Length: 255
Image (cartoon, rainbow, N blue to C red; front, side):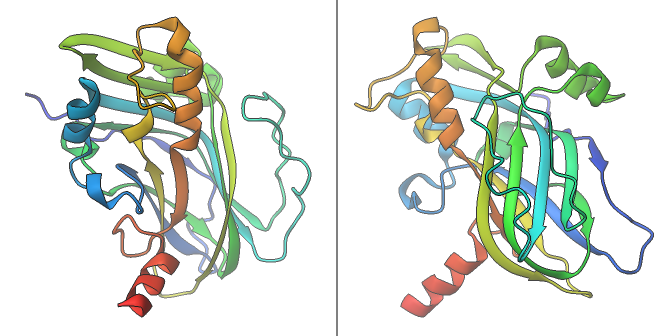
């Protein structure tokens, strides 16, 4: 089978030539969250065993990811609902941005590996918030990125390709997922920190009672989309081990 791997195109809002900026890696991972140890590493197999559903490819359109310097609260009170198509109002200099870009993962990349998808450049300092916005983009915003433009033309923010009981399906959604994630990490000259976007598919196709949801059935769409919203997280992960760095420290103290 041809290895599709990762295709991503990034529009970097950065001052790459400035000596005052530090490169921050941006990674993505499809796998169970750090607390779900029982299914980590073999997510695709676990999902198939419990639901009869396999996932072959996951595509997400990320409108924007931002890091916010400590002490800046210019966005407080401006957060809209999860699907509200409001104009972006975040233009404060203390926010370091990247986007739009496409996360496109398939085959072995769906089994919990952390995959580098790009970089952004930020001014050194302490950051206390990670914000991300997953949603559909216009064909103009997609620019020359053919893969991102494909989602734009479909009016999609998420496309999940897979099979259910051996029959192929493609779940296409235009959901909007906006989250502000509290964090506390310092970016220094001479270091290369990393942010990981984690996408946990283990609960996508089951309801609150654990019953299977058929992605081909329109009556299941709302529940699946709500599950999708809850499955996406972002955190500082300098060693790219899929755990939030502060959590690693806490674990070591407990040993």
